[in-house]
Image (tube, rainbow, N blue to C red; front, side, top):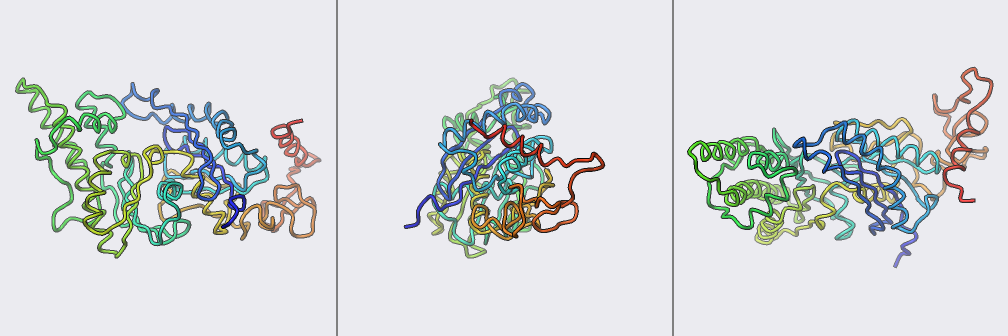
Amino acid sequence: MADLRDEPLVLGIETSCDETGVGIVRGHTLLADAIASSVDEHARFGGVVPEVASRAHLEAMVPTIERALKEAGVAPQDLDGIAVTAGPGLAGALLVGVSAAKAYAYALGKPLYGVNHLASHICVDQLEHGALPEPTMALLVSGGHSSLLLAPDITSDVRPLGSTIDDAAGEAFDKVARVLHLGFPGGPVIDRLAREGDPAAIAFPRGLTGPRDPAYDFSFSGLKTAVARWIEAKRAAGEEVPVADVSASFQEAVVDVLTRKAVRACRDHGVDHLMIGGGVAANSRLRAMAERRCEDAGITLRVPRPKLCTDNGAMVAALGAEMVARNRHPSDWDLPADSSLPVTDPHVPGTRGHHAPGRDDTHGYGPGDGRPHDGLGHAQDGRDSHDHPGHGHDHSHGHGHTHDHVHELSRRNLYDTD
């Protein structure tokens, strides 16, 4: 049996929306999962306000990282890499996380991995159920995404089969909850109320399930509108709205479509495993119906525990650890925050290296070419370890001195305990 200490130790940062998540993973083992949420600050607006989320991330970042390191019982210098959600998500929120990851990676002399938010939601299941089968069929359902993805290799090959045309499942939950005056976020409260209602009480429509409709795409806008009109008609007639029945019937329509299309995708592509992730995967009815339909179809269902379904740093660390284990290229220091990063890009590779961090240090982040280095991949003769244009100059810019000593002082001030 392999020594757990030989597995890559990676810290992951997630800031795509309103959760500041920091996770630490060693291989497939979760060591820490620290989260600071700003959801209460958005509740009075009925949805996430990007500027509020960005400022909350900025305030929570360092304390959340320190809490994760303490929980995991590891020192920053022990890490083999820093992973961060590079996209998709809210641009300002992503920028806070990417900037923080760059700062920590640079100060520690560790490789940086910019990874995809959606691919991370798939990879987090490895922390619960072990290595993902290849290929994996994934149904991702959240506030911004309802997607069916086929992943032959979660680090390099993720193929979209279907996606949201308009409202994602999570958006529909929030909007229906708003019409019912249930507050924000809507998913948990509708799930709770639906247990007291009749899912067959109201025949709400199932979008994009006709014979000529796209087999794997999703649309919940029509369903949301149908629910809103039904409620408005009741109120206009002076009748009481049966909130529990509306919640149960609406939820049943969403879950029916999601599970039906996911099972069909598995059958059509000959895949015998289905992984469900994203915030809506915490919904109790979705989990129950998926379990029954997968069992009937002979498909093995994998769903992480609810805490790992919502946005978290553990999922980013899990994908980062897989990148390290499979020797994927680290990202460069000019890694962007890409709000529309396609799911076909599980991570944003750089051009510097070919090796996993902490193994032989020849990937441009440490010595390996016979020349002195500053521990950050910069050779002290004014070139970096791969002589890339734009990376190997001496940073003097006419000031008459280099800035390497400033960076070294910063690193010592941050991480020396003497």
